[in-house]
Image (cartoon, rainbow, N blue to C red):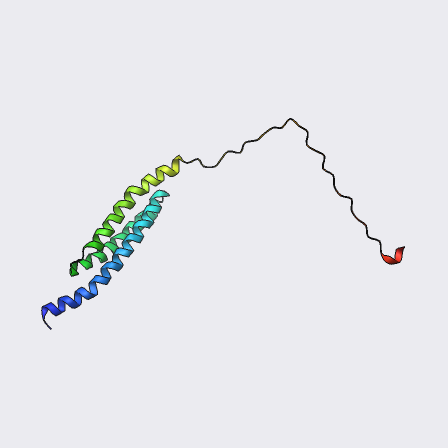
Length: 126
């Protein structure tokens, strides 16, 4: 087999691997964004570590001349690292819970009447 044939076969194999790697990297970047927004440092570190594996896999698409999977995974991590703290700052500024307002009324509440219990008499007691 010539080197051109080997190159074409390897490119046919590495291209889908690169796209799968980019998908893994984008999902891990999304997990990192959520973890940074919730201030979960351990989860964010694990997600970025998993992103590295996805980015390395997306690098294999470069063997076929496709660099978009690597660029997409890089943009996803940069967006996660920028937007995560921004979302965290927005979450901190939101009030924790709405305060309950008590309204005092001047009028007396109406008396509540209960219905009287109904006693059923048997037919033979008449």
